[in-house]
Length: 493
Picture 1 (cartoon, one colour):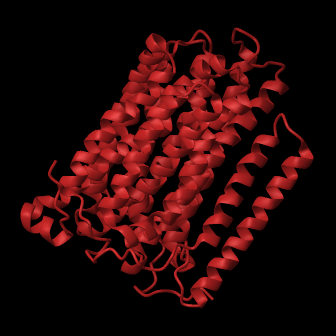
Picture 2 (cartoon, rainbow, N blue to C red):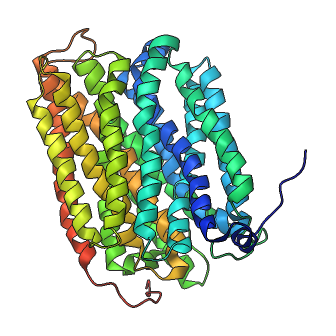
Picture 3 (spheres, helix red, strand yellow):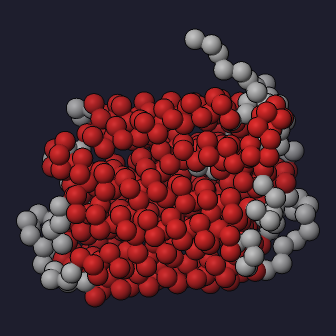
């Protein structure tokens, strides 16, 4: 077998001409589609998996939370991996790990092995997620970054839009194991594309430096400990010990403070921190980070909550869940493509604010759904929310990253994705906590075979919490219009 040539960015640009930047974007888009599909599609299989392994709601929730925790922490390593190993080796390694996780999860006979496979998939997905934003900000001019973000976003959302429909059918026909194997074809295609179009160089076209500075292991350890303590503390808040929950949440707060202090110390000593706090000297980035955190909480919380609502609240089959969500996913893809072009012409704060308002409205309107409601009403509210997402997705990164100094782009893309996913990991746990709390308040539980108006009320109150979070994020979104500071590295001291 002939070894693929190790082509640099300049080599590939000379070979493919002006269209190369689009081919590169397409290549990383396929891998990102695989990682996003692995993040969301498993939610359709959670009820079936819970039955197979005799899991309670808290343990079943870790199928999603474990993935999110691993993905969140690994995002912080992307800038270092790209600088040390280059785009191609980093990307190919992630795709191989993601594929291995899918195979292992589908063949596992114990829940611990399933959870381990999900963590492996999360590690790979986390490293991949910031790469497209780095490429868009570096390879495309300001006049076409919105278009690139829109086309990339349109392609990426098709995976989770079509995934639940296919996944629901697969779960009904072949069981939950089939869900894990769905990412393998995309992983294989992404590997083929990577060897053709992804350069071996690091961001900026410079050569990768395998002998560069070691990663900030202490910062990474503090980030991992803080994230795991936070998520475990949230799980302990319902169905666990209040003392243990308080201890874990307190440890998470201490780890966060230690992480910030250590990052400041590294920067002051002239070394490279895991997260450069100079990023937050740019007000649009700081406000965009707040929006990303809250938006992640609402997005991933609802992605976890909605399939449960449809299956356990409305007693619908898994295949019906995908059918209801499919039109909303297709509308999302079309919306992103259109809004991406608008992002090159309209202020990003306005587009993000519109999106958050629509997303909040879609959550609040779930109150109108009853056990006798027509399915089209559910599809309508789901579609409204996806239109809101279509306004946010291509606009938020551009509004936050455009003002950054060029040297901070990789760190900025990593940090804002980290905060979004941290919000997402919290959102999954938070929705589980609030839902269990409201179910108990209404005198219901998932132990009951059939749904009831009381159970729907518990779900609706959880959706209302998500609507309130989106409204809160709008306040920060308005601050994206603040003027950016000069293009220099702010002082972090």
